[in-house]
Length: 352
Image (cartoon, rainbow, N blue to C red):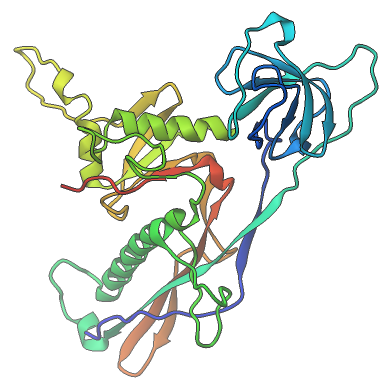
């Protein structure tokens, strides 16, 4: 038998999708001195004045106070404090402010239209290919476990390429230069981990809570913090958690101590296949290729693995070449990853 070899090919092919987001309803105060003081100031400077319009009711931080916006000048808001008799609060630099909603006038003119511009995201396709060559003698011989050696090798190569595709969807990385490929640069696609940039969390860092025992062990505090953060700043909801075997066992252990068994039970079950929280019902999926210290949080409606048209995995026979039969299993795929900020990942988890 002649053992199969792997090969690649380059051409300029990419998958382009559009990403749309809602108008932001939060901003941050950018002001250190308030006149006459932080509780009575009616002029407030924010980072992005364009997010506000006259008539907005705004809540500073977690206070019960509501402020009404009466004028917007660049990034400076003129507001009515303690609107509707709400309790006073103190403003501070860096404080988050939330737009509760806009109160329009009865019979008033239509407000100025506002919109967000859709941004284009692209990911290049990657070709997965493996060749098979079997000598005439091997095809004629009776081989244990296979009626046709060529067909057996074709199926093995297909399974290997499917394995590699799954691994690439998670860990794939496109070249930093010439992503479309060239005679000297192989074209490859970015995977999920490479494309999640907004919601990357590490236990105990940048305000993200620590894990079990105050360390980096995965627990329900870490899971809920990630789910809540993504839920608060996106219009979607996480429905899939993807992790490796070690972190999957940590998720299973969340309920291990509270399981009860009757004397007649003959089956021991230590498994969590669905994690339900206030921020979503998530299917828990195990993948060999997720790094041991990482857990992925995905909105599956915005993730799709797809082939280039007419380029799904298929076997292409190349006919007899001398005293051997040859062929190639080939497919060309990419990952479409929409609304990047609707997904997240936790990394730096304990692996011991």
